Image (cartoon, rainbow, N blue to C red; front, top):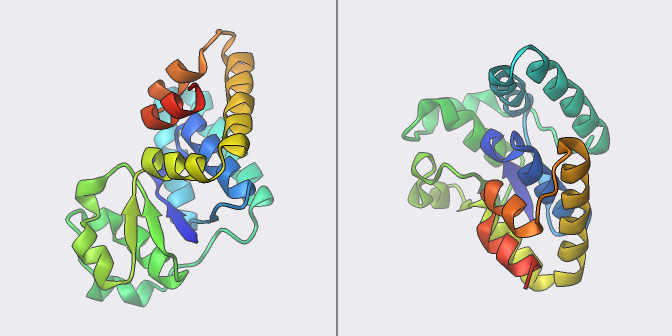
Length: 180
């Protein structure tokens, strides 16, 4: 399965690490465009002066680790497509260009399923996608979640619990599953 990762699911660190970790385990092939990654960098500005610089470093590592994931969208498609938020059409164009199966996003209202279905696409929110992957591979996902928790605790200096970390990362179903 090819999945386009919208900016809103790769900008938050824990969500990104869980999604890319699941991809690394072979559960799907991630796809994005240069514009999606640029939106991630710009969104990081709100974290302060170092936020964008850190995001750009993480983007460089992400590109190095996933060299086949970035796709140049067919810009000619933009004129025939419609979404409620015209600023999201580039995500749909990327998905069509890459022959993706799904767009992973938390912005359901911006990607109506009926419009995506016309293009042979589905929309999934990251929590449901990752919960489904956990159902298929609980051992792999539990190990991944433990690694993400360890890194979050190391970087933050806090002592998160797995369930609390996943809830904060907007992955409550996954958090409940990996702690049961």
